[in-house]
Image (cartoon, rainbow, N blue to C red; front, side, top):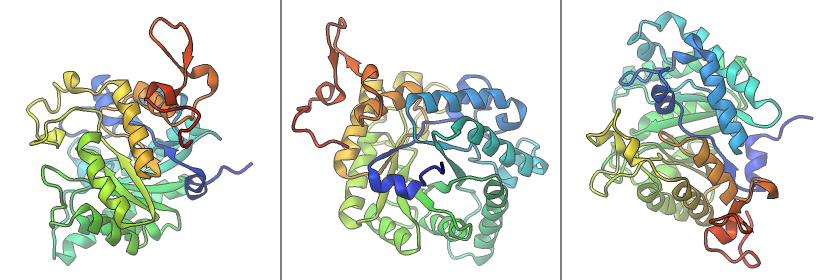
Length: 332
């Protein structure tokens, strides 16, 4: 039986994304801090496979191929510019193998660091970079495309343009650094409208910020548009004056004490659902237990995996655990 596509699933209710890959794989010794390039897909695909399995078993509906920063210019920083096709192909194949009939597999393109506003030549370089990755990923059978972590709305629009040329559904998410706007000065609401008008099927935000500093902007997007929205915050705690976790002195190798608890990530999933977010995922710092807690909060796990009260006296549903009345709570 053919798997339901991303748009079909979104019509039925919230879709649960996976967690963060690069920072977790760096902690496990397979990715280098700094470049954060995904050579693990070539050098030790079993490590990548294991993380995909963890997210699948935690309840994720989607597995993202680890092709973030798998562009020729970024791979050149670690001497792998000539292995672009091999790396993108391996990353998709590993994700597809683990996903099986259970999860969808998303291809992935990301910020390039070569975009310049009002520069046609820079825009063409970005187009070429995206097309090179997408050609391989689509040939390997991804189910839809995710373009992510764009601080420039202009670059995000190029991701929509190139993604739509594949004929697959496209999700594009922007990120805010320490100001609540894109690098051009566009608000969350304006960015969402612009991306949907350009043809994106799903829009939203990802990375840099934790839920507490991302959901207010997502709420503004929800009030501004009626289309599908995606939210994928980081699993780290950041201060209000520096919401971008990459701006903290702890980044990248001393973030462990800032990691959110599983219950905080579960509460995020509840809050996102209640705001009307359709694709509820997470990014850097979010691990399998976070995704599992999010799955529980969204009612995506079977009864035998319900939450338990302290001491294990009786099982507790996710609705009770997060302070809702089971009988009257709006079911996902």
